[in-house]
Length: 309
Image 1 (cartoon, rainbow, N blue to C red):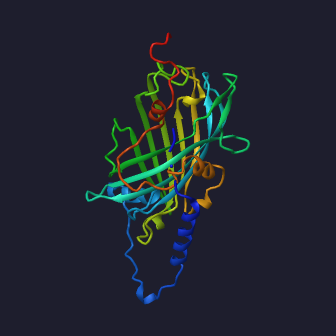
Image 2: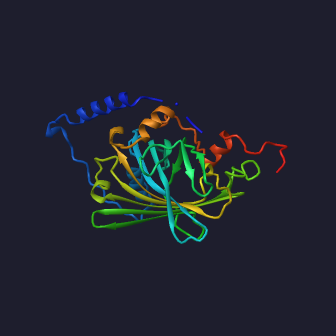
């Protein structure tokens, strides 16, 4: 489950040059003030405009960097308490392109790593206290290509709910999604890794940005802070199989102007192990391989065809 590369030194040099050019004074007579844009957060097109500014950049092909980190907890059979296990952290590079129909094609490369709670270092193995054994940790990288359209009205069958709230100068975007799918990590091939024939996961997120920045037409991208929650099955590398229990993750994600702003061990690890994922994709393929499909594609089966049991 892996990925290839571009060094951060050249990226940082280019960003420094861009910053220097941006700081060059311009004669006031040459600057024409752009008209202010008032956003209506009941308008699906305005919602999409704000979403792209918060998640990516309205300028075609302009790369944005995002990162997140949060603690993964175990929810045991009795469900009475959360047991912290390790961090999950991500590093992503994305671009967006506006289409003639008003939708956006967005592309991102990202790396997901699991970190030790005490040191913050990327884990290669983790002691599973319920199995009483060390298990190999699978860190991975993937590509996400998706088309973002104006949101349809929310109804009883909506699998992704997105709601907007304006409070003074704060804009809050709430999202609530659920995933129900056939699990490509089958119990027949991976009896210890598979959580069953079906895969169930819920994800929620709350993103906050500034209204005056979203309505400023001179800004094509704005800083946004997102808190997220994931309620899902055991990660396959934990080898918990269909043992009772699930996982719960709380994380926070931000956008960064440069890679230097991303603290911790993930950037160096990603640059070493997944160099091809250290910049945004440049060609649209429409591809997304989710973690479960990556596992089923790349990890050797635990039970070979013809084996008993």
